Image (cartoon, rainbow, N blue to C red; front, side, top):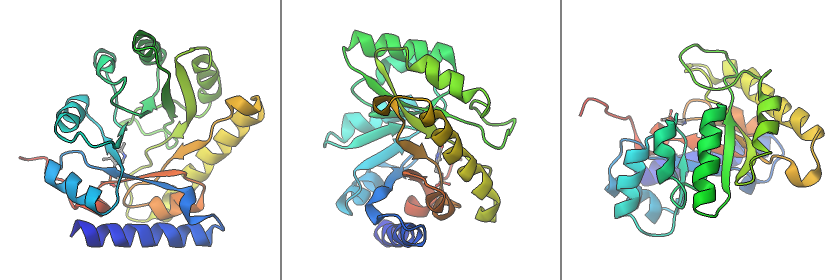
Length: 230
Ligand SMILES: *Cc1c(COP(=O)(O)O)cnc(C)c1O
């Protein structure tokens, strides 16, 4: 099933790229494996997946302890400050930076490991009360503050759009995130410009690609429904 699902997702991604006049290799597929067993990840690996997203630090630790092949693991979920210490050397990109205390802790832990960590700022485009993330208005100043931290590299912006049956309703949020990135970049020197837009999930990744996503985070569409009851 995972193989067939992946074929479909990749085909849909390529078609969305073509519709948008973008090269098909301009979008990275992040296979969101949260709650899914190691066997499922191995099956996705056998189909060529190399980038995986998890939303809990403990689960990420457990899985990377068992799966030792060189993969790209991304931390995509809300992050508590006291868990940051586990991430250097384990997570290649943190998608969910949205407050100064968290940024400061990432800076501290990255410095301890003598490395620079790539991060994205999470933006709550639809102003949903249930979601984390900065308002679009706060984002430019926050990005600027991150750029002052020597062990952080702000690579771009991430958003989690509302759950919807009709992906078109999320198009304005994706377009808004792209415009926000462009407008922040306009004030930055070339070498500091952000190049990642992490947006789009199973229900809306094609629309997100049409609006400029460079990373899509797809879970259900690859691995099937998640069962949180077990
Ligand atoms: C779970 C999750 C996804 C994937 O959601 P699907 O709808 O299953 O594709 C993407 N991004 C984040 C931040 C998630 O937590």
